[in-house]
Image 1 (cartoon, rainbow, N blue to C red):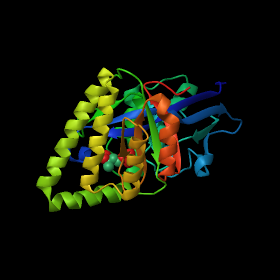
Image 2 (cartoon, helix red, strand yellow):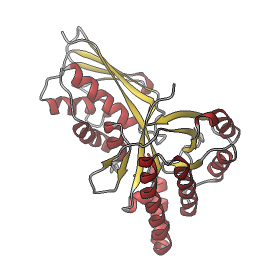
Image 3 (cartoon, protein in one colour):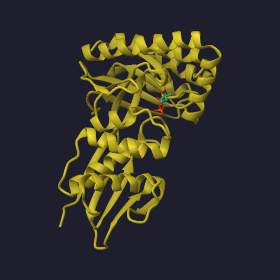
Image 4 (cartoon, rainbow, N blue to C red):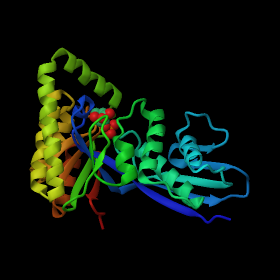
Length: 314
Ligand code: PMV
């Protein structure tokens, strides 16, 4: 009988280029190794594969669940790819990643299920296979996903992403520390993307210039990360935030958190993801963690996470 297997998978965060990526400019996303989804699979006496996800209060039988059930679909696509039958087993999923917060929780859970299930069956899927499979499942959550989440999370590497081009992973010259601060304000990616589209249609010349500037920032940020030029990366993040504000996707609460992080000594800070709520990221030196986290909380953050990109926090 197969042995119990556990696999963990990181979340992701967009470092720069959100929104302009929808208009063909590059974006950069990085894995968040300190916030992970976990899948554990163990043999069961009853026939069939059952998935238990307590975070979302779901228990599903892979055989019986409908096609739009993302948990079951992750397992089915894995079995299809391996040309294997469902084992008699229980797969338990747990995630430290908040749901619908731009941290890639859906993609991380899918990759965790696929990796644990394939290992349980004595096989291993490549990062490319995991990414493709996860993209299919992401369509259940997002309709037309950009492909950023599945790529970063399956590869567990920074990704330079341009729509309709194969994503490029790249290396980190020096590890750097981020704080991720949740504003506690819910926002819908779909709605914010649609707002930007309306404004772009009303004023394409202005918005195309903003998108070009952000694209240049994403290219420069990639180079800064590859060369370990962390202070320069901070400046680029600050500039990206101002351009996102000009696009109309920031709100006073996010601007306030960004300013507070900078005043407390962060090398750079910006909103991340779709905006109008959600999260702010602050690039910090490790010794600034407490001061910047306190400033973010005082400015309204309901939760602050610390993560090291290119390493893990101790
Ligand atoms: O917050 P997230 O991870 O859903 O990011 C949204 C990023 C956008 O550029 C605004 C939309 C997209 O599909 O790339």
